Image 1 (spheres, rainbow, N blue to C red):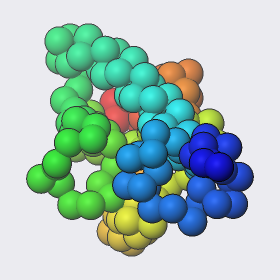
Image 2: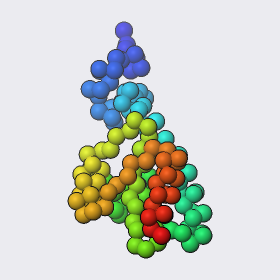
Image 3: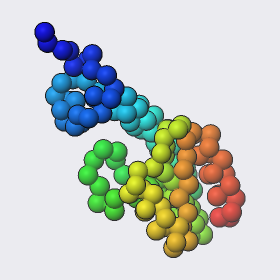
Image 4: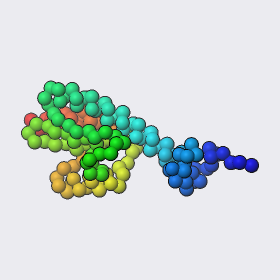
Amino acid sequence: MAISAASLPESALRLLSPADRKSLGVQSAGDARAKFESREEKVLQGEVSKFLSFQRAQGRCQFIIPPMHAKSRLPEGWPDLTLFLPNGKTVLIEFKAPGGATRPAQTAMHASLLSLGHPVRIVRSVAEFIAIWKAECAAAS
């Protein structure tokens, strides 16, 4: 009697490599959570990017958002957004889905940047970003 991969318990799925789970067409709860978080972060990043593109057109900022899921020339763990404001103000932002956590490389990079006096803000919503934007713009002027 054959066992369907979809009927495997979560404890067994976690023992399979991601490549094996993919070849079987199944995913663990962790895979599903990571996929959901990635999608949420991509949507958040897109909305903030639209906002910042408008602000850049008005001459209020410059910014760098490396493409998600593409090989970047930036160091591993670099924040998702590097924002340049007037008067030499730089703001570093990491986008995370609600409940999402930083990866070890991100945690290490954020600690390194903080040791140089550049804190990285974790942002989980557009409203949270707008509040940071307003506060940082007020401080930069």
